[in-house]
View 1 (tube, each protein chain N blue to C red):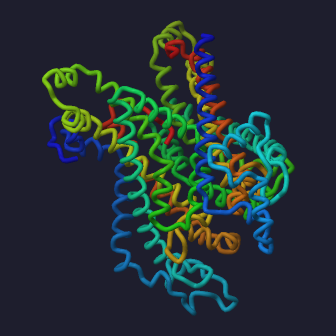
View 2 (view 1 turned 90 degrees about the vertical axis):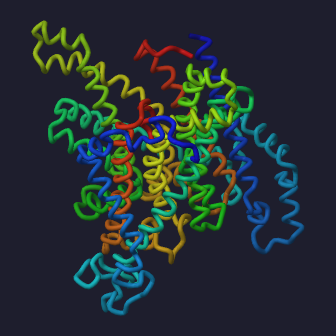
View 3 (view 1 turned 135 degrees about the horizontal axis):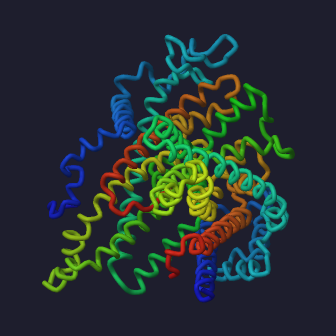
Length: 298
Length: 306
């Protein structure tokens, strides 16, 4: 995104009164506050977490060897092997955010490439690209992600890439529609008539107009990637222990959830809170920025 | 109209063929060796080679695919590597449970979603509206395994109202349906709300009011039927969401459907089953989209057929 802000679109968040209108929405403001908190928790985890997340404490288990419920010493209780859950949740925030942002970044990149190419260029190649997108839309996304994740020995990067592979489709579809209608507009015709090259038209005129949409779908998309990562890790084919992830904390402890429900409820609530925050902010951005208002199924 | 249907049918068919190629290619690239798997650990290299020969695993990719596709056309999904059973039989025995769950989930999401959306629209801008919209946001932001385990803990473990898992009676159906339905309910609530608000703004509603029809009658007899149709037309598109959900929800609740079948097969790298379930799910999604495409123009004549 090296081009200058030639249109109002690129400087979207700097639209007059954007933040004033944003903060007028209580839910979106609350969502943004939660996001800031979680990002801070993730960044500062090594300094603010009370314990080492991987250390097993002797006094972290009862005499019978059962995990401790939340108490003054271990705020969120301890897990099955006596590790501090609060510290693991803080470190888990890092995993969720890193994968969420990485996976979503890659899917937005693929989606933008496919959508803009398919929408701007005419010919069999771009038609084939869009038919392939249609085909991916009919794939059961989670099933595909599970098959892909199970194929590889999962690492943070692999999990992020697997999620990106199934998640680029929606944004490609949306950007395709928008690029197509943009490409037919008069000012693009005029540019072409004046001799502007394809690259110039794409980077200077098409892309800036797509920025609001990309911003909206990136925010909503992170919510989806966070949920996918949690689900894969819960199935044991996502982020591998001992690296803490909110999904694999539930995976490791679920057999005891009847006697130690906090081991499922606390990480579960953390996942919901993070996805909810991204969804609330993304929804507000859509109302404030996105002129097309399409695509309700995340 | 007929050409529209024909074109959509052809597109659906092409998508299915495409999906079978992509899935086959993906599974073909798997590092696992099916012949070794079938033969067992103690088998000699000769036995393994024989099995490989029999299954055509030494053929090039396109020949293997054509073999598989030729079977597919006759309804033959191949044999499970580990269960030594026809995949079509396995799927046929598991499909009724998944269809039952789908019916339960759709009932839950429509009942919950439409009620929430309706109340929110009628109380627009009031606290009830804000609370319901927040609830619907939570619904779409909650991963299904978390919802499933939480619901299980509250209604089965703590309250003891429903069995913890399994299959057979109506009571078994309630919690997994609810788990799958909550996600959809979130979407439906928001769609129903905006659809209802749109309808309430239209002229014929104002006319009905000015003719002296009571407010309640206007809502129930004039606004609701008009608002609800476009929302119900979305069910077809929902099938994709549902097909993704069953893999997780069926394993949380021990529900013996095709989702559980798929998950077990993935863990054991039983490729023919994975392939079969993926195709059946894709078929369901394509049928759902097709129905949605067919129904929508009837509901909203303003939508042009392309």
